[in-house]
Structures are given as C-alpha cells and as structure tokens.
Length: 184
Image (cartoon, rainbow, N blue to C red; front, side, top):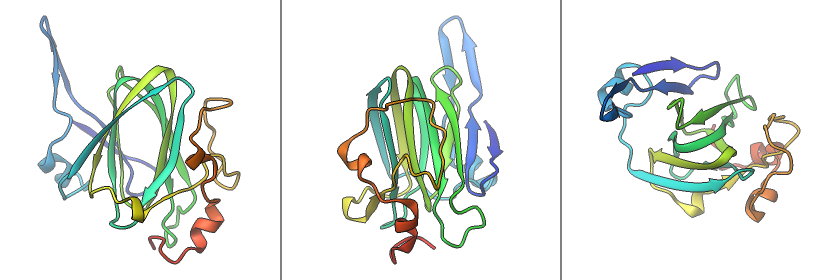
C-alpha cells in the first residue's frame, strides 16, 4: 500500500496495491500493522458505514467530538470529491481544507483523523462511500459546519448541490470555534 502524508498534518492518502489477473482483481484496503508503521493510525476501526448518493448530492461538513472520531473513506462505486477541514483550535492549519476526487477507478482512500470535519459531493451518476470509523457514532456528540462557509472557501466542483436540511443550517466555522466542546 502506498501511503502519502498530505500538507495538513494528520491527513493521509492511501492507494492499495492492486493485483489483476484473468479472474478480476484483489487488493488489501486496510492493514493495521502497515498503518501503524506509517504513523497513520494505531487503533482499530470499530464501525463501518456505507452510503449511496446520486450526482450532485453534497454531504457535510460533519464531525464528532464525543468520542473523537476519525474516518478512513473510500469510494467503492462511482466518484466523489471528498473534503477534510482542520477544525483543531490549536493547529497551525486550523481552517485549512484538503479535497480531491476519490473513485472506484482510482481506488484511493483518505484517512481523516479526529479534529477534522469532512464531507463529499458526488461527481458521477452515483457514489457509494464506505467509512471505517475509529469510534462509535454518537448523535449527541456530533456537529455540522456549513459546507459553503466563505471563511473556509471550499471550491466544490458542483453548482446548486442537493443538500439535507441539517447541512444547510450547519454552524459557521467561527461559531464552531467559539464552542467550548470543540477539540483543541
């Protein structure tokens, strides 16, 4: 597996090695000892989620602070522009974002540690997304930051996205930073 640290500390892009033959292909998408040795993550993933979305759907920006939750994100069908925003108050990169298209074709995965908000928008007809969580989902310990907050300035590759009511009314980033429960 190729593991690339990204410009925002804590984010990693991973590309599994694919083995093709006449039958199809095989690839190892997660291996604890490899991630640990590369300094990506030393824990275990405790929950796996799968979502299906149509072209133009935008989900995010979501985060969970109680307990702190990180994600390993991969696309198993279609494509999506996946974004991670550093929301750690004491980070030198607080407020910075990283985004790129992940797809079933390029098979890249993004590790987003706790202390980040993440989201995606679907760029093909569909996207099926798998999320491997470092902590159990807790609806009482999660939050939503506006996907279109101008202070973050994400350059989403869609116009007029299809967004849930929850995501439309997420907090502005400066409001989020003023909360006492935000990860430092």
